[in-house]
Image (cartoon, rainbow, N blue to C red; front, side, top):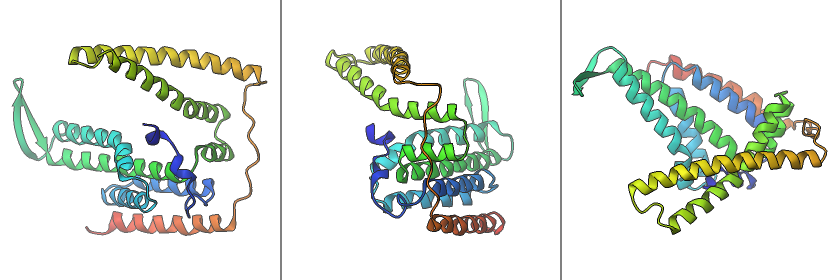
Length: 258
């Protein structure tokens, strides 16, 4: 669980981690823009495949990549099923459930596949970005992009204390398991409810303690951010090369009669 949320692999030395965070974020934003404006599945799926292969080439464990994609894959599955069953069009098949006749349509399937491919493509871009960029550099770059200070500070604190809450969750779950809290389905549901309530209570307590500690250390309503160094020529060149490549690929995959 720690590795799923951690940016530990962003600390490695490679060609992507050496790039300026601002350059990587500009390229990532361009890719996401191309994905969400695409009218066919080819651009999103191409980006998804490229990002996954890049993470594999960077020696990020395949198991970790799969774990990070499990949530989005669940969302994609729900999108495809709902669109297929709720959109009217050319019938693929039909069945009766609880007295209701439900028909799956080809138009719904294609629409759901497009929406799902957009989700996978955009998420894969974010996963690759987080795998090659430490979190503190992302937050620093966000301030350079003039993102409101309050948003950046909240994101920073959320990231910082996510791991604290994960540790507490793991401790509570281990204590429940030692007391046979998950020995049956009924007890498991009860234990999960207690676990969720306890974590929420502890997160509120942690928020109060954190704010009091920040005030004692002179917090005046905003975090100080140091100056951002000038972007290197190599990073500027990477932006100049990447954006036209993405644009050309987008036009080819959108207009080419595939």
